[in-house]
Structures are given as C-alpha cells and as structure tokens.
Image 1: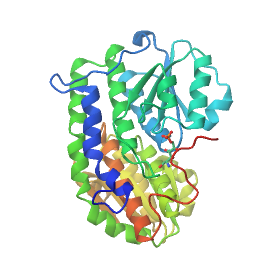
Image 2: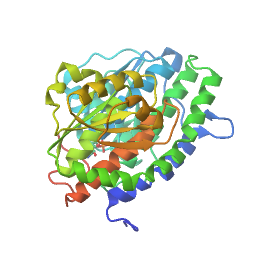
Image 3: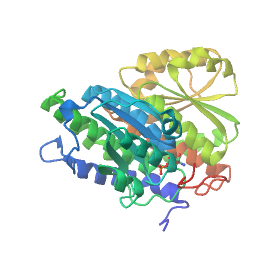
Length: 365
Ligand code: M6R
C-alpha cells in the first residue's frame, strides 16, 4: 500500500525518520546513552584482527561508509569489496577475522556466495539484513537486523539508512568492547545518533526546493557527484540512484580524484553535485569545488549554511541542510540525494518503482 504517495519509493524515503528511529531503538540504550547490541558477539572483540565487508549495489555503499566508522571508532582494519569480485578472488582471510555482509533482501547470490566462502576460511559472520527469514540471515553466525520494514521500490532507500544506522552502532559497540573508545566518546556519539531521525525529518522539508532543482537535472545527459570522506560513498550512491531510475548517466567520484581525470569533463553544461557537510575535510572539498567553478561547471551544493558560505563561489543551486555534528551526517545526507533522483525520474516520466532491466532482488549472478 502506497498510502498517500504516488510511488513506493516516495513513501519509503519519507518513512526514514521513523524506521531509522526504530532501528536505533533496537541497538541503543536511550536511558544510559550507550549502545546495547541485541545479540552476543560471536567472537572475542579484543582478539579481533580485522573486518572483511562485502555486499552489492547500495548495500556495498553502506559498507563503504561503515568502513570509516569501524576504522575511526573501533580502530579496526576493514577490507571491502563488491561481492561479485570477492567471491572469486580466493582472498586469504585473517585468523580471528570478522566477515560482515550487508543485504536488504538477504538473498543476493554473490553476497551469499561470499558469506559461504568466508565460512570456509574460518571467519565469524555477521549479516546485516532487512529480511530476518532470509538465507543470509540464517547462514550468518549472527543476524543484525535493520528494521526498515518491507522495501518495495527497486531503488533502495530506507534500507540504506537503516544499514548505516546498524553499522554505526556496531562500530561504536566494537570500539567499546575493544577498549579503544572511552565511555565519554561513546556517549557523545550515541547522542549524535539519537538526533539523526529528527534531522532526517527536517531534511524532508527541503523537498520542494529539491524538486525544483530536479527539473534542471532532468534536462541533462550526464551528472557528476563529488564527495570526500563518508560523503564519497554517498556520491557513488547518488550517482547509482540517479542512473537506476532516471537513466541519466551519472558518476560518483572522490573529490580528491578530480584532477586525476574527471576534471576533463567539466564544461558549462555539466551539473556537478558536491556533497559537503561541515566536517573535518570540508576545506579540501571546497578547494575541489572551486576548481570545478573555475572551469565553468554548474555546481549544485548539498551542504549546510556554513559549507555554503565557505564555498565562496557562485552556485547553480544549493540544498541547505540543517547544521549537525559531522560523525553521522552521511545518514542524514542520504535523504536529499534520494529525493533528487526520485524527482528527476518523476519529472522525466520514468517508472520509478520498476525501472527497466532491474529486479528488486538479484538471486542469480
Ligand atoms: O538485497 P541486497 O541489499 O543484497 O541488494 C543489493 C543490490 O542489488 C541493491 O542495493 C541494488 O543496488 C539496488 N537496486 C540499489 O538501489
């Protein structure tokens, strides 16, 4: 049931404040401002040597964001690859290693094959899954549920932000259990996570502005997305979302890679979406943005008032997000990225919920 929405995708985008809050409530002890995992870790966290993470598509991008958190909060090495590559690489895997697989459906063939390979290599498996009865949930040592509810739209939205929520919680929990994150730090991070649903709700109010910008995107053939740090995987996700449902060619790049190639694409026609929350790498992103601007690129800046002021360059468009702490801004910034793709596709008259050539669950390779 789509409720009052025209598409499942719109409904699922708007459900995010609620389902992220529900997922958080499953992992966070709100009374004591700490993470409380709904399961026992299937290994000794102090002996853990590293994490291997595999997934496909949007779930893989969630993993890429998660990598920043596991490194920073739990001081763990993270090896990450798409499952279709990982499953055939015969990668050596460490002793006392954790394999994290991320999957909405829990049925993706390549992700499942990667899980099975990791098992033969003696890894402990945590499956971050949305469908609790799925094969991946069953074959994991521990299923870490995302409580997004059924996701019908082929383009993943609410599953992504719930995956991020679970990965963030897990990173904090591992940091604490390994003795590398102090109780004060945990409290600070948990407080930041607790405001995410409210920030998501606030960012929904930007929809009219985003819809207006989408009319411009709907008339182009190519779009470039740039981001740094956790905003880099968001740039990849933004490009994937746009191409999936609007069929516009889009690419996501790490902002710092610009001068290693893609800057050659910049001309007066190319829309460049720069994802720039106020975070420790903002200054660097701004200098990339100015390089685009100097070459006449049409910048649409997704940032807060501070980052927009810092850009100090004419913009073709801006999406002004609420101010927030930097650690989990990727969860909140996912929403405008999704809305931009959604409205562009709707403006172009595309079948948003059932894009051509795509299946919701890829159970064959
Ligand atoms: O069910 P899964 O999370 O394992 O699916 C992975 C990908 O097939 C999926 O995220 C796909 O990329 C979506 N269509 C993205 O919107």
